[in-house]
Image 1 (spheres, rainbow, N blue to C red):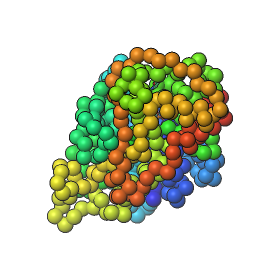
Image 2: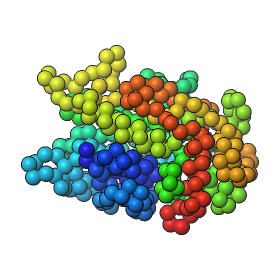
Image 3: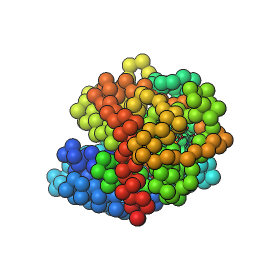
Length: 365
Ligand code: NAD
Ligand code: UDP
């Protein structure tokens, strides 16, 4: 299949491009490079020996997106692309609280413009990067897809919730569309080659990139945001998932949409509704997590073991908006996609460390 991947030079996008190429698909990448480096896709090309045409464009530029989506279509008028994997978006939680309009504009308005361009090109299949943040502070863990969405604690989370709703409404209104909503838990790690990985700009917001930068000497100590949560050791518990497993989940979701004929118009012309709930069957939702939660202290210990380095820590106040524990019930993805995470915490930390050690300053180093 031929895919357009938005956010292709970013952390998860670059790993997904690699897995798509390895699975025999063809990819065109789009990114505005606001939070990533062109170098990531060059390395993907080197690793796979395959070319990835790249267009530097903003998803909010509807004309540019329509041009990309229509370009290179076969002469017989068939669609140029089979699907769009949509990773492009701003993702810094704290920044979203300071600049809510910029986040809604980029993420929500950007997705609307992309959808419009897709419609104009007759490309009506999308795999969307959502987040476990849409569950808000859940009443209980593990979290299954049947858990009602909650109230995210920041504009970034709301932007994901809004986009999910837009996509669900679109699928319900038009049976030709098929959309997979993938709710990620905590993606970490890097490709095992150490050639591509997470390269945050400035001070990392997330735990594993921060630990990695402490290990490599770029930061002094990790602040543990609260050790008085109702968890076994008092620190926050999360479901860390290896980015390569996550990327493979996207390939499975794509194959599911295509092979199950999701989104093909049925004779009645109605969007098929899933039994027992309001979600249209042409807009399935899957959690992508391991089902296992680890505390901040456990994550630090695993990183220390993988790297052989000591990570100095200090306990700091809780971070506003954080919840005590969040981990997935990944049963649905296993049953429907035949997908489950293969890498454990040790492999995640080993690969995160290899990437950081080999690229201490990220792609620009
Ligand atoms: P990332 O910042 O590395 O990648 C996102 C990419 O999108 C970047 O390369 C950026 O330059 C690009 N981009 C942003 N706005 C754009 C625009 N208007 N037009 C074109 N390109 C644009 O982030 P990531 O971690 O790879 O995340 C990918 C997706 O997954 C995002 O939508 C993010 O919200 C979502 N997600 C990430 C996590 C996580 O922890 N990393 C968790 C849940 C969901
Ligand atoms: N965390 C921490 N120190 C940091 C960054 C994160 O203690 O410098 C904790 C955070 O409070 C949470 C966990 O690590 O319990 C994962 O945070 P991250 O920001 O990586 O992901 P989130 O689950 O918030 O999306």
